[in-house]
Structure formats: C-alpha cells, structure tokens
Image 1: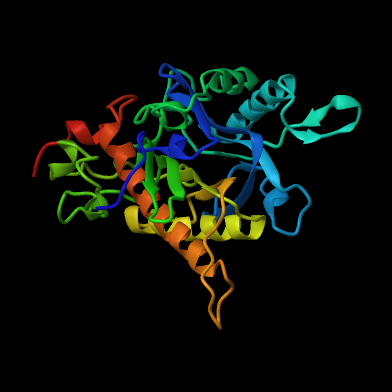
Image 2: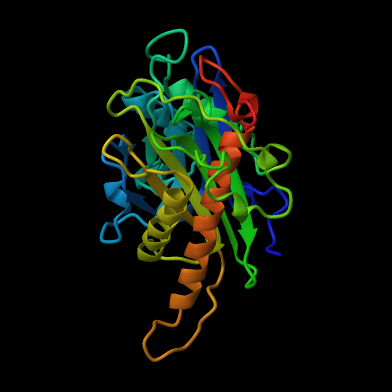
Length: 334
C-alpha cells in the first residue's frame, strides 16, 4: 500500500507551513502556503476565468526562481488584496528577493475563487489583514479541512465545497502533496453511483465513514457565469527547476480533471501552483531517449495528480453545510 505522510497533507513536505484565516459570517477566507526560505515555484492555469497575481513571474523564462509564499483566497477580485498582507508579514521578517540596503521583495503568487453573495454581505470584507492573520496562524502540523480558509464559502456543483489536502511518500523517499480549495462548476460526485468519481484512490481509511456512503445529489442551482474555480498548491521536497515545477503543475491538473467533471470550463478559473522546497535530489535514470531525471519528474507528477484527486474528495467529505449550501455529510443516502 502507498505510504502517506504523518499529516496526510501539504505540511508533510519539509519546509512548508500552512495557515488559514476563516470568517464564517462573511463565508470567505484565506489560505497561505509559506516556504520562508523560498521554494522554486511554477504554475499552470487551465480555467478560462482565472483571478491571479504574479503568475507571469513564474514562467521558466523569467528571472525570479523562488516564491516565499502562495496565497489562495475567496473574495473573487477583491480577495487579491489579502496578498498585500502576506507580503508585509514576510517583509517584516526579512524573507524575500534581496534588494538594496537590506530590503527584500517577498514573492507571493496568488489565486482567488468566487464566493461573493454567500455571506452576510455581497462582498466579503477581505483585506490585507486577512492575509497577515493567515500567516500568523501558519504551522507545519495537520491542516484544517472543509469550511476553512479559502474553502470557507466554496460551492462544488450542487453541494458545499471546501478545502482539502493529501500527501504521499514515494518509494524514492521524496514527498508529494496537494492542497486545494474546491469551488467547482463540475461535480466531485458521480451522479450514477453517489460516490466520488475517484473514490478508489483512497489510501487506508483516509475518507472515513463518509467515504463509504452513496448519496443523492440535489439539483444544480441556477447557473451564473464565472462563479466557480478550483485553486490548488501542490508541493514536493525534491530539487526542481522552474520548468520542472511547471511540468508538475501541468500533470497535477490531470488529478483535478479526474476528480471534478467537468473541469477547466469557460466559467472556472482553475489554477495550480507547484512549490519545490529543494530538500532531496532527484534520482537519475539513464536512458537513450530520456533526460536522466525524466522518470523522476514523471513519478512526482503522477503522485501529485493522485494527491490532488484525494485532496478534492477530502474537501467535499469534510465540509459542513452553511450559507444555504448543503454539504455531502447532510445529503440523503441513495
């Protein structure tokens, strides 16, 4: 059986901390993934309605190699303001791209999801302070899932969305993990069976009692354009360059497409960041037609795609009903 990390989450990757700020009244929140010493970071955007910050910087052809944090947030376009708080928090601690006179420029790519009109006000009062609070809450222990952080006000198809995470330790000893906020237009649940599409990826009993249930899905709500998005951070402790990190982010989208159907639509802003903390060398496999590290990158990308599928399922199974959205745990059995 495949091995999972002790937290079964993104914090199983050495060098990674995760923090949330959650406002249940506003039905929104912020999740920050911190690697203060810097992680080589890539990104792949597949949805057609993204809300992002600093993604161009992560192209392999561009200068800066490392990010000190990645932020996921609710609040749609308003949510990007929370990244300013993450920058300020990192700058106060001296973490960032080095500048003159001892100053730093913290690199904080970000992505947001649409959760407007789900809380007490149409626009949640999201601001830089939310980003700072998420940073102050960051740790390397178990990650709160369900209605937490960026997944607080999320919807998935006709039911409550949420935040989930999962990890895997490869045979090489390299760690692979994913964290995701699921606010998808598509469904994580197969309507023909009532089970999650990728339920067979479960390792051990990680999905618990809820993972054994088959449920009846409620009808889809009246559709409105660009009100969805699944955003994620995947990570590994391997030494990757930016091109390799971008490739792993690309492969991670396969896990999203398997677990959410449909995904990458015109109304989703599906975005995945990949952070590599550089603690372990990639094993080399010589071969006439392949680069020495090609098999290792393939193995990491495949494992991370599976972790993302598992994290998506966890997000749905651990969510609670709120803001007029019914969670999986409160659906009737088939």
